[in-house]
Length: 156
Image (cartoon, rainbow, N blue to C red; front, side):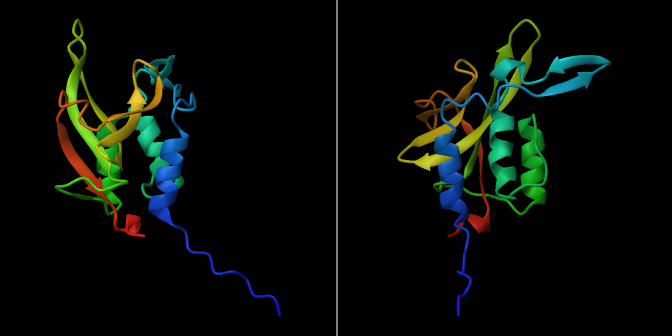
């Protein structure tokens, strides 16, 4: 008698694999939308792709409900999906960095999001490389983390 194997997804381990395997990927560079009647790449060829990267990973594991192009959208979805703020980083948590000035002339300030992978390292989309990259989790103490989020499904 053949028994079906008992399969229990390891969500945190899978999340970390998705995140680490995404380094250098061009998959998160473009998302097209009609804005005021005009077709636009709202991720600007990867310069504004951190939210798309973060939400794609979370959506793939059913840890949020929708894809997002803004960090604010991810945060609202995470909070509605059972994510809670934590005080200390845990491997697999979502990091939200302070807004920085992205366009001085237009006075645009943008938040940033990514994942903590341990050993003071994070992976997030680099606007310079236009793809997910590994870096120090505080950008060598040059960027403040304003929130860290954790979901109980990551407790595997």
